[in-house]
Amino acid sequence: MDSSFGNTSKDLTPVVSADIGTTSSSNNGLLAALASSGLTQEQQEGVGKALAYIQELQQTVFKDVLDAEKKRREEENKVPAGTVNPGLLAGMDARTLSVISRIYVGSINFELTDEHIHRVFSEFGSVCSVSMSKDPATGRHKGFGFVEYEVPEAAALALETMNGTMLGGRQLKIGRPNNYGASVAQGFPPPPPERIYVANVNRAIAEDVLREIFAPFGTVVACVLSPDMATRQHRGWGFIEFADAAAAEQAARDMDRFLLGNLVLRVRLSVVGGPLGEGMAALDSLPEPTEGKPQTASPAQTGPPQQVVDMAAIVDRSIGAAADTAQPSSTTASSIVLLENVVGGRADVDDDLAADMAVEGVKCGKIAKVVVHVASERELQQTGSPHSEVSIFLQYVDVASAKRALELFDGRWFAGRQVNAQLYDPDAYRVLTSADTMVYMP
Image (tube, rainbow, N blue to C red; front, side, top):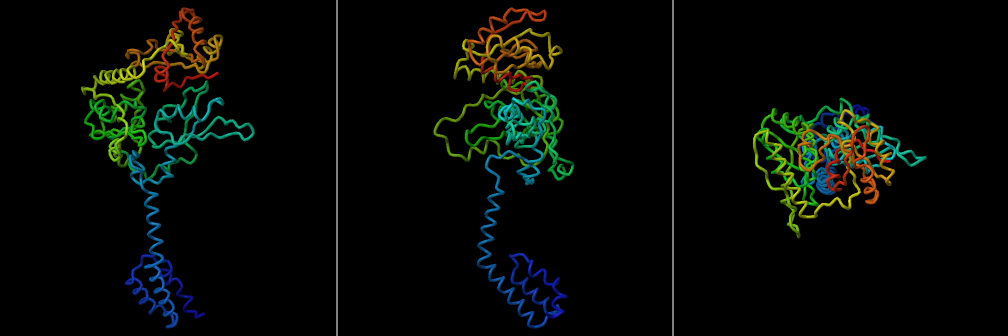
């Protein structure tokens, strides 16, 4: 082979690595460059024939292949209708978004299952997956796992709230996975300081109602809730954006753990920036359902910040009235026993309280769960809620056992206090204890 050809191989790199879409004018330019490259006339003619063949392929076979590949990539990158995920809508890498939306959960009670963890942590947002490391010999989990959320704000809320809390008699250890580091945090779309994330929103509270509830903190520019395109209801979380950052900071501070619609709101500032998406407006593109649209609560009146509690009470009563109309609640067939005045207050609550009550309660029958509920100041002001700062719920597997427990505990003296016991409505119990972490399951 001619030595001059070998010496100019680098010069030919643009020819073989040129983009498939290279135009004929570009090829002509390459041919002109070859004339002064030191190649022989025969070699130049050979390269010219190759370029002509490539150009022919571009206009026939390659064009169809490239068009199909381009269409496939567009479909893969297409964001589903109704998506409320600023990072994803801003074009963040899916793998990076997954890492920052994931948390480590350690010190898990060995009796708890994936379902238990999913139910507890879904309070902070939609859980994509729960993965718990299993022991191949026993088939049981090893006491730790990972929870991945749809948005990083949910992961941040869970990390801030659940670390150190008691679940199943053990103190949870929440952290970030090993692959989360400073390098991962680089390149995020900066979060707007005027935006907050809101989770654990009652399904009966519509976007416009939520907007009016937060309006006393400042002008609300946008309020979007993540829609469920199948059920046509929101999924209990979304974003609110104010006109200024001070309003967002105050709302995040004052409304976190606020009782609204019998659920405890979870609120924090946003983590990543990006478009908010359409929210519930995305449902407008769907065909009309054959049955009636889901009912939502009536809009409440706006007012100054000190009236937010009153506004929430209006929404609560609206939701309660709708529930009573649909199915009157009754405690006569309840397997839930509420114990009040067992301890003096939250200062008397220790890690063993739920287990101690289970030891007493099991004398009346099999217990499914014991929950120690510590009420907030706002909750104590709500009508229809237990009036003790500390309430203990015994959930039995059958009604007969609950009735026996009622006879055993009501009026009984326990550590110098006379206990008040009553059967409790199962629906109200599920709502009230949905956010509780001091849970014991025998």
